[in-house]
Image (cartoon, rainbow over all chains, first blue to last red; front, top):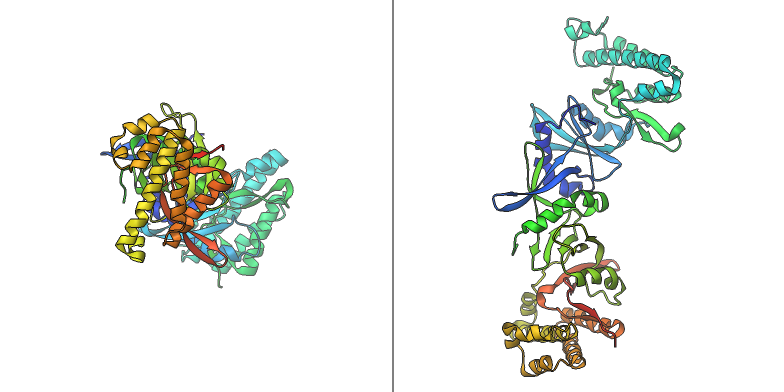
Length: 257
Length: 263
């Protein structure tokens, strides 16, 4: 399959710069190299290889590692870096991929710190609606897609407001926001999330019930949950042996209102 | 110190099997040095600890484990079949052997993963520190004698006596009885001489040398495993757990020219 977005040069630089550090700190989770060949640099024999990413997004890329069950993510999203390091281990519900290690590198990209995260590998990332389509038919899939999009829109509004955006913001207006009161927009998001807990598809309901439970019990808010950030991990206790989780928990905030 | 840089043929072999190594022994991949980014990916040099006539030794991403690439069939066979059976831990421990059968122009290449040894080839310095120059020289002479006897015995059993006799540098260093032994081709006599020289080392002043050669002698006596190439460059220190402690031991790091004697 062709890669949608190629490993960007800055991410490749990060891997090269941190290679020897990774060999010392996380030898079992080194990025997997592909297309390795021999060459020379001057008279010195060298090898050339590619760290081929699974996918790249706005904040970075995900790479396979030497461990089939663990992927490495390069990200400049400090909320995910902080979430992985401090919040993920405390979650009362298993709604996220499991994080194994976080390293904050001493390098920056576009003024932002670069983090390396190692986490459980997820499958079917971005394919929740396709799975529902196969499972329940296109009408239900369309409805689930609409509900998730609605939840995402309210989440984006809420995250922007929590970051200080007001109704004068074009971004908020474009999203159809009708309030910039934090409690109100968070409540709107919670309502939209609640709709997903009664959508009639058990594995979708289970995930969003967990998200809501975490929000209510721990005040942890997820501001960027769309279908592309959800994937499946093995779970022998779950129907079909998989459990749907958040794979890319960016725009996370702990809400103190 | 690196004596010989990772040669292009060895670099080629490792590059060509890199995907196999990632799949089969990800924990023991070679370390890369001087890694930089290129337009298409990652460039690095495989770090080596040293290269010799048969191949190279490389550190791996797991501390304490090295990768050895060798064209020496006898070491590969020893690592696979004999090393796990030794009644005394006189060698570095081998963890895995992968024969590479599909390398063009190189039909006999083996990848061996073994316990890392330190101070390889550096036995002389601690002997001087511990026993003084004269005694160190005496022990070294015992090691040399044992090595020459081992080479003679291995040469005779491998029917390479004429080749050895033609090696002027080797023959010049032989004492008269050793030269006569080589010329006669009497394998029993050569093996006896080797065993006697190993026994001399087993009772030498340096306990760490004596421990190793006591083990060599016991392995020979009980298992008939003969080591024909034991010189100081093939010995090093490993640190092994003993109860709650970890203790250093001198062991054989490069057991080439090994034979099982059928008496």
